[in-house]
Structures are given as structure tokens and as C-alpha cells.
Amino acid sequence: MFTRTNPNAPKKMPTRKNDAAPMLFFIDQIQSSSFDNPILPMPLRIDRILTKRPSLFIFPAKRAIIQANDKQFTFDYGKIYSLFLENLLKYAEQKYRTLFYRQLDLRLVEKWWNLTKDLASRIHSFNDLQAEILQSYLDSYQQFLQGKDEKEALVGHIDKIIQYCNEQVDQNSIQIDFKGKTISKRLYKKKSDRIFPDIFEVDIYNTEKQKTIRKAFVPLFIYDDLVECYLYNKLQLDPEGFNAMKDVITPEELVKQEKAKQKPRLFRKSSNSDSDSQTDLEQSNSEDQPPEEVTLISFSALEEEGIIIPYEDSMGTDLDGQEILGKINIEEIFDAII
Image (cartoon, rainbow, N blue to C red; front, side, top):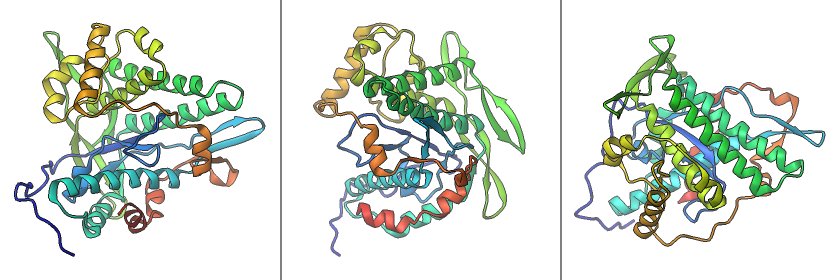
């Protein structure tokens, strides 16, 4: 097949060999023209795919379960991670065409997938964070089934995750495994009212090779990204509540010093003034595209998609991330997005 080459295209995508590249996901509350389903990877580390270096998917240790109206409900975790990969690969394919003027190669994706699917996270605080995201979302679904307004229930979920991340950052501590031992590390240090994010290595276990390796990551950036996404949705669904929020992290100095060097941010609520928040939003809209009409992603949409399903005792409560990934056919997902 003939492909047009771009003389200005980069020879390769920059990445760091020692990067652990952890990735979580959240269930979006607002429909987006950029993605076909609401399971959004965070952060969108497509550089790992394009450079054939592994990603580290984060899994909750336990299944989220609720009971409402004499029935129990949970998630189809295989479905969730399939949709996660669908959005990740679709975004990677779009960027690959833009950068290199050709279609993303299945062989490249398979190389990345084979390096990724057997890696187990030892970032315990992130496993807990992923579990909190999913349980909180199901709790909002439970409230909806019991009669609460759908939008109000989803706003409650947004508030809970923002609060959870704020508390974790305020505690300035994260639980990881390092050299086979569970230890606590700080997220950042302060000096003269300036914040400096910490970077450190964590154990990553390869279940296929039965071998532990160590890679580095900056945990504060993950909390920052997640709060940013939820703050944006908070503004769209509950502008009055958004404007009433005070002292929402994450640290502005961190953004100015470090994160702004790496990638542009979609939006941030400033703790200094409402006018700063409005300015950030206006800049985001003018630089990217006109704001779209907000459409809520309903709970019924997740039911129809098979994301939320009835719980059966045979499912158990423990989750094995590598078992879930091992049942996913990456070639089928790739074919669906091409």
C-alpha cells in the first residue's frame, strides 16, 4: 500500500527506557467526540506503544460490588480493559498518522502488548486508587437505582474522587514495593514554598518470566492528571459547586515548574481566584476548539455496553490483572479501530 511520507516527521518518538509508565483509567461522565466509549486511560501514554516499550496497567485487588433492589451489581473487568485498550490504540493510531503519515502497524502493537500484559504493579496506593474510582462509581449507580437524580449521583462521584486525591497528596505518602519490601515514599518535597515532585523506582513483577525489575515514575503527576480530569467534568456538570470549591490541589508551582515542560494541560481550577480558573478555561477552549454541548453518559449506556453487569457468587471478589489481560485478543481490538 502506498503511503505518503512526511519529510519533517520525527525519526522516532522520544521516551525513557527506565520509565515505569503506570496507567490507570476512569469512567468518563461526559460524552466526547474523541472517544467511542467512556473508559479513558490516564495518562494517555501512547509513546510506550509507538516506541515498543512496556506500559504498567494498574488493577484493583478486589472487585467492586454493590447491592440495590435485592440485586447485586459489579463490572465486567474484561470488558472494561478491552474498552480501555480500544481507546488507547485508537488515540495512538490517530497520532501515528499525524506524526508519520502512515497507518499504525499491528506488529508494533503486538510487540508492545507482549511486553506489557505480563507486568504486575507493585504500586499499592495506585491499586487502591483504581479500586476507589470503580467502587465510587458503582456507589453512585446504587444511589441512582435507589431514586437519586442521575446527574446528582455522578457529581457526588466526582466530588469523592477529587477529595480522595486531595487527601492522598496532603498526606504526601505513597505505598510501593521496593526490593521486595513494602515501603512508604513521599510524593514531593517543599523548599521555600516551592514544590518539587519526587521520582523513584518501584518493583514490577513479570508473571511470565517470574522476575522482578525496577523502573522509575513520578507519582504526583498521576494524581494531578486525575484531579484535572475530574475538575473539568465538575465544571461542566456542576458549575455552581465548582465555583464554590476552595483550595483544590494540585500544586500550582509544580505545574509551572515541571509539568508544563512535558505537555499542555487541559484545565485547572486555581486556588487563588475564580478569575484565574475562568482564564485557564477560556485559553483551553480558544487553543483547542469551541466547547461542545455537554451530554451526560448515562448509567443505562454502561448497562447496554455490558460494563455494569449483575454479580454472581461464582465471580469471586479477588481480581487477577494478568489473567484478565491474558484473555484479551489484541489483534481483534486493533482490527476494530483501523
